Image (cartoon, rainbow over all chains, first blue to last red; front, side, top):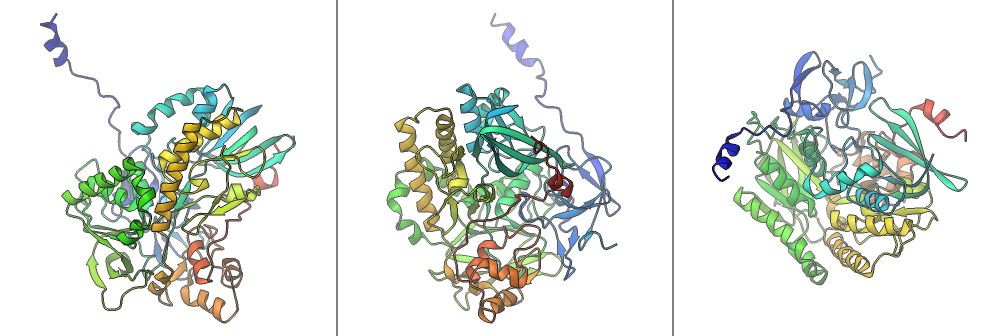
Length: 107
Length: 455
């Protein structure tokens, strides 16, 4: 009985969750790597990108601020649709994220 | 189909209430704006493990109808029942739930006080930075995924503001590989001393604080109390902050500012209850010791509106333990059971602790001296402090609502959630309870014909 224990321990343990497989989407045409379940904002942050919107009046750069969907600073245009909250929206393979200028309807 | 109880919010309060009510035999529907249960505190990435403190509760959700990614935008009385309207999923599909009783456990969001440069990319909410790290595995400003050895590990993140959340945020960021050169807290030790009795009755909480403090010491973070970040510097992104000593009223002491280079700033001044569903239904509110409105509840977590209960941060910010205690009491009450005396005592003790913390971290009136005229107080509508002050001094605005009508401050996408406390203070008032007919943006088509309304 005791001799079997070491053998059992040597058996490789199956990983509890499979390693997440990264995928890519584009930001203003550049490829960005994301992990499944990551928000668009988190993936952009991970790529070192901090701003993906310019304001309507001053044209100032903005990105994620509150991180929980409250402040609406992180609005981005995703697959042609403006005003998506990047901090809430899960990134999906092949998404085309573009900098939102002003209301997103200006051009 | 009509549920016995609809719970709005799947944080510690909502999860505890839903699990408890289901155990008591009620048919429970739990609606939550997020994809994963746990709320802001126990946020976790898709595919990742459920955080240990809520694992047991999440397992008990198998007896609950859990509707994730359902953002409830309004609750209306419909005869003997309540009708909850939500936008569901990333494509914002309409959804409706009917229930005999409703528990609001809508949580809180971060209070922000503006300062010059706070709109620069790289300046993020402290709670937001933590949420993005927990839920999205991303660090602000540095580009480092914490699990790996990304290029940004070692990026410098200053943590600043006020409140017990800051220690937790600094610890989380440091553990993920960021360098936190300084933690800047606007309150001083004297503020704690005034509430020593209530604080000392909660040794577990004090221990938690000591633990966070200890972990930080090992990571060479400097703690500066009675200081604030009074300016952020950079052109297209944050490059440095100015850290200034404050007097007891949070007024900056002239000549004490010094520049600290950094890649990101995580800033926040405590949490404020998320109230619009409750106030929209006419629930009475109270003012917590930091001047913030919260839903008023009785000993059984009943609001002033029959059939409507509230629990957790909605009733005043107090942390997960208190939220859980309130959730359990509320569920018992909905099921017609009297909450045990021990639960009531625990709630009272934790609430006293929360009130003492709130009082100790109440923003001092002098913070408005951080502003210069060009500081954008309302981030959505880009309204400067100079315009708001002109509305107050030249045009006679006496509250946030008049300022909004005159300047558009608070009229943008976030509906004043971000700038509301600051605008109210600039108008010389404590913030009023939120009044927002819709708690989130709703497609016009759903307003025209919400599902379930035909009945």
